[in-house]
Image (cartoon, rainbow, N blue to C red):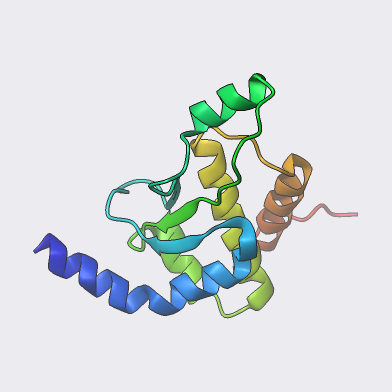
Length: 137
């Protein structure tokens, strides 16, 4: 039963996965449906040949060159935020939400954001766009 559900999720989500990959560009190697997430909308996964985040930090702290690697982004296609993203027809809003999910997954993975100030600006723009009260002048 789980396998059939996963296959159905994958089939229904191919367009979403492609759109998210296009929105994130070279930040990720691949975007795929998650079989492990229950409560979270997204997570980052290292490839089989990639070093763990901890090993990458140890090498960097020792002054060693850390091999470049791009994570895989897994999406919980049953999560309400991912469903909202999938329904978004506005290209800029879709891009902003995709980047926000990527940044959330990065933080949840214990990594630092490449551009923390941009994350804050993006989050503030989305909060305002989604109905935060506007000040009266």
